Image (cartoon, rainbow, N blue to C red; front, side):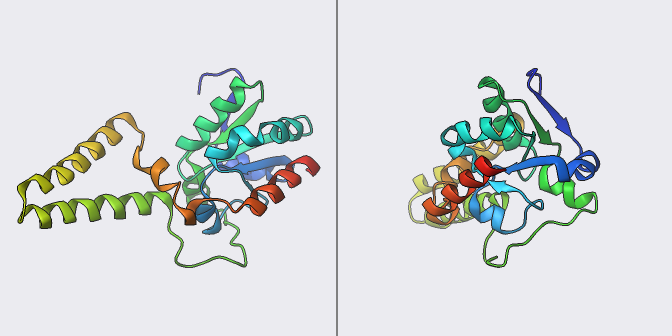
Length: 192
């Protein structure tokens, strides 16, 4: 990250400072429910703008660490926050690096074992569309274009280090925060 209001912390640095950080997890509620850093508050990336006043208030009281699964969404969130004058740090490598560093994730009591990470949802959806396109392509060759489109999207995704499918999947009901959950998070930010 090159913005003057952003920097990164590795898992070891974040772990040693966890007690003094305000941790924002910008993954979807479904991903957050699979396990998150202890004390992390869930503000999905697509709700970040709505939470700006509360995040700004919390940032005045302590340092903010932004977390996602791999670091990509947290860097995007840090850039958005920095553009609004809020200094933050991103967890380099996300929750994957956190667990690889030997640190435990907190699993809420209401954890549903059927909840999948966004990466797993993307892989499943892409594979299902490719297989469907190939199967239906036996009936009508034009259906193979769906498979080709997904293949091209995956190549572009790898080259650009972005994912066009994840924002679409994040809009599914199981990936959306319930209104009350987001309000509880915002209240916690105000009182943090």
